[in-house]
Amino acid sequence: MSRIFTKFAFALLALSCIGGPLHAQYTTTFAKNVTPGQQNGLYYSLPQTMLKLDFIIEETTLEKSPLSDYASNYMEMADYVEYETTEYRLLDMKMSSVASPDPNALFFVTLGSVRGGNKMQFDITPNGIIRSVGLETANSTEEVREAPVKKSCCEQQPVDYSDHKLMNMITTGKSNSQMAKEAADKIEEIRKAKFYLISGDVEMATNPETFQMMYDKLDAMEQEYTKLLLGNRVTKTVVKTVYVVPNKEVPTQTVAKFSENDGLTIGTAGSGAVITVQTLSMNTTAAINAPSQSAVESMSYENKVFYRLPETANVKVTCGNKTLFEDRVVVNQLGVLLTAPLTNTKLVFDTETGQIVNMRMQ
Image (cartoon, rainbow, N blue to C red):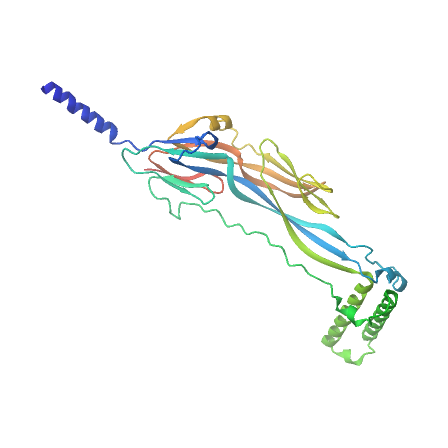
């Protein structure tokens, strides 16, 4: 009887030793391999680099005047608007990077039952990118690296140089030919007034400030009457944005086209000079023996989570034969995926790159 009791006591002791120090068991699986409807877990992703290309474009709208057909009769070498159209000029291009969830680095962590110890705390951004994981609440501003706020480019307000009020100053009820003659006469009068002002025949213009004010007013009137004959040109500056996700398999991507007649056309359609983005890896992570993408997608990993070592790449943006941008840029998805232990550790991730920036043993 005592032998039976002794064996039973040893069995209880063994069970207590086995069950006491155990913590929750976690399994990380590629998202596509998760059973539909599986609830006992959570999804998280690592960030990929998305390139944000802001093209600063000058748009000039040519507005035809009803009097422009008679412009050549009254103004020598008149550059009048023959038909309404829009002309485009590429002024500049600026590039920045934005972190977004990577569909090729989306994982599901299965949460096992807890038989001892503390529960693991996951901290994930609203868009699903992992920020930290550990045995304590990860809300320390000293350790968690928040993604910098990106200021979006805004379109500049268009500057409208048109003023059709002067049309009312010309006597209505006349033919276009007569109104064109009247506008030409007004222009001639204004030019004579400007000549008298410059030559000093106008006594009021002895003061430099008065002279400048009078000249500017005459010049503005001449421009407005000239528009009535030649037509109008309305110019504004706009920003067109193209987003590009660098691809390891396709180092050179055609992202848009630009022409003076059609402006910027996103994609491969349209006409004009081809805009390409070339991303060449610097292979700084090539020496790391990391699991292949197929291994990442097909296997399950116990008590481990994925993080990323980002890669540096030379990014070059060209429009036809002209280089718009060239510099070295961190491109996350060109790097490698690795695993870090999840048991008794606290991990803090860089939400811009997916790299572990702090690891603390509990």
